[in-house]
Amino acid sequence: MADVAREVGVTAKTVSRVLNDEEPVAVETRARVMAAVRKLGYQPNLMARNMRVGARDAAIGLVIPEMGNPFFGTVAGGVESAVRARGLTLIVGSSDETAELEQSLIATFLARRVSGLIVVPAAAGHHRHLRSERMAGLPIVFLDRPAVGLTADCVVSANREGSRAGVAHLLSHGHRRIGFVGDVPATLYTRRERFQGYRDALGGSGLPFDRSLVESGHDVEATALATMRLLALADPPTALFAGNNFASMGAVVALARAGRKDVALVGFDDLPLAEALDPPLTVVAQDPAGVGAAAAELVLARLDGDRSKARRATVPTRLIVRGSGELPPRR
Image 1 (cartoon, rainbow, N blue to C red):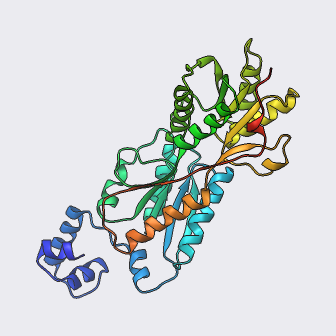
Image 2 (image 1 turned 90 degrees about the vertical axis):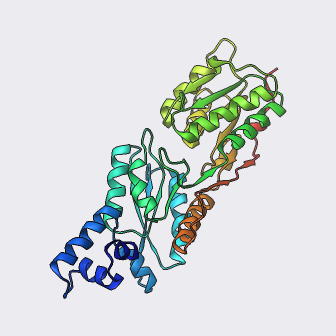
């Protein structure tokens, strides 16, 4: 508002009267103010104003790819816990992993004048359309995956490092033929990083990359079929690394169907009841609640006036040893 006032040569109070359609303001002055508003891309943020006076209806918008994925449900819980402590409401929408729906949800949140925006980018999307909001000072944080075409804050897991540690764990138990099941070719940042971690671990042990040991599957059933294809090879893998929680579930299903308890398995992402499996599942566990809380803290810091350069926060993963990843190679 102060920028608009300086552009026109009037007071901020006059700008406020124009924007709120209050009298008295001369017609010419009103026209000049509105021209400056358009020129500068100013948008009065009613939610931010409410926050300053302590209102309870200020909101943070969160866009996630899918409601049914336990990972993103826990992420949302981490965000909500952090923003609730500041009297903010969390509004959540699912993009169904499509760029079009993601942009539609973002437009809806912006129309509601949310005080901050947290986005898990959909596949094949871009975020150049948020440049004006970013330049205007709206706190925008990208979660789990960086923005495309926009420099902005983001919070990610240590995907490559975690994947490398999981495969290195299998290598340390004597495995040399380690299969990979997951989304390949990888288009999303998380998938690319985890697949690269798999390759890094093999290369670090002097093992060549064998494309025949890589199978793709997106959901549980597709990954189960992918695992069965690996098991049917003339020289099958003695161990498997699953690139995400659905891939882990698919691999577990395939091994159970085949009656195989001699194939080592490490999954990326923890699963409910992982300890109850036979053998219990060894995983590279993310911290989804921590990822959500870190994103929320970045938004809150921006709302509190932090104007430093955009930064990336990386939340560590940890290897949870339970049994499936410690099976020795078949003799």
